[in-house]
Length: 70
Image (cartoon, rainbow, N blue to C red; front, top):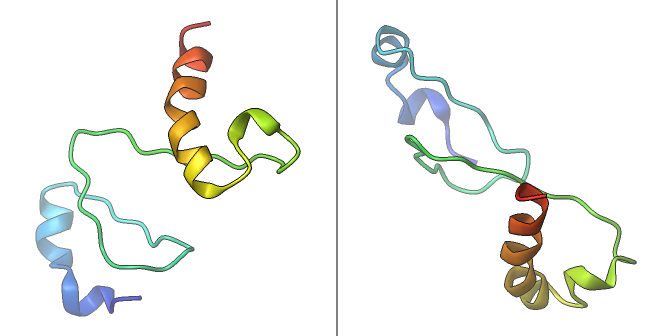
């Protein structure tokens, strides 16, 4: 929920071909450089993803790895 015009140097970003996006969930700015980010949405009925957010955080890396190596 930061003011992008107050936080970002748009001319420098354009000159250096740097893109930016606003996260729909809000929150503070996060700098990503040479990394991969992702999000995942799934029905709560998929029990393999856990019954709580902490269980999901613990299980997601192995589920993601399996999906990427199939």
